[in-house]
Image: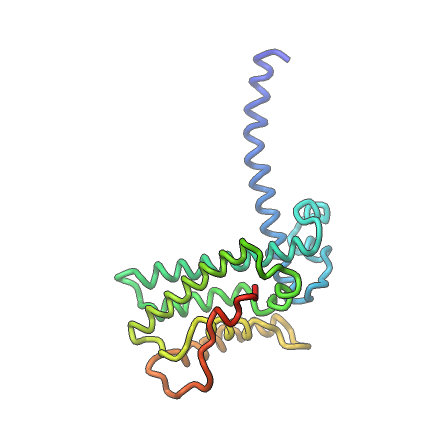
Length: 226
């Protein structure tokens, strides 16, 4: 091959490489998001063929990215936790803004956005298939605890959040609201989750209309959970 010919080939190959990498990245994310939804609907034994179909990719693409079911489930855990963390950190910035609506509103926006990740429907899956001491997931949990704990503390200091609740109370509520009941439709749950979440959030507002029984739940209560 002449130098001129080589020069005519190399730019084309170089231009194609980023596109292929971007396509592969998008395919991987589509697979993981589809897996999240399918696992919520059908559990840990959901057909991988259905996940590939819903992601709009072939089975070969799914297995090229994830050699087995456990690897895919772990990636769902990482993606979901990272997306919730990003929402919490965004809400923190909003709560700190001098012209913002206030820390409680930032907390509410975080709660409503986080339930879209359907973590309640994935709790059993994560606890049975993902290492609770996975270093990457442990780091995400620590950052999430810091972000959500800070959000709630700002709302308390502002007199907007009742003093007798903690971050664990919020996560229990969002998990329960996004965990489908046996023999019920996941899509039916989706129709009401934000309505019922708002009822719960209204109950968090200060001044508190009642005294809560028991103690507040904290992250430490779930320190070995994913």
